[in-house]
Image (cartoon, rainbow, N blue to C red; front, side, top):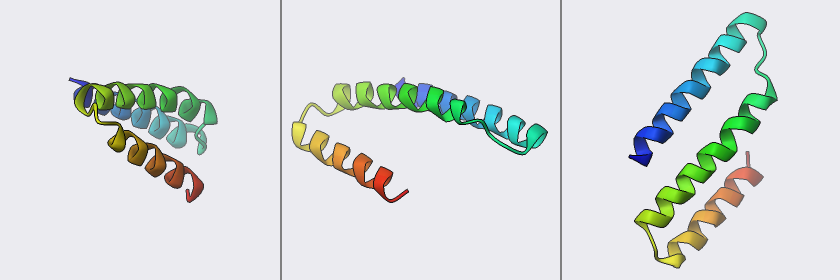
Length: 71
């Protein structure tokens, strides 16, 4: 269920971003600031429901931090 919700959220975000990029050739940062926390929350809920083992949780947060550092 959460997988479909994440895909729909991603599709909506990309459609809005594509429309803005097409119209004004720039994507507003507010789009990312709105959709990113929603996506993170959905992913964390799915993660907690699927993997209760906290060793995976530590690796997951390390991967998020590394991704943000080397973006």
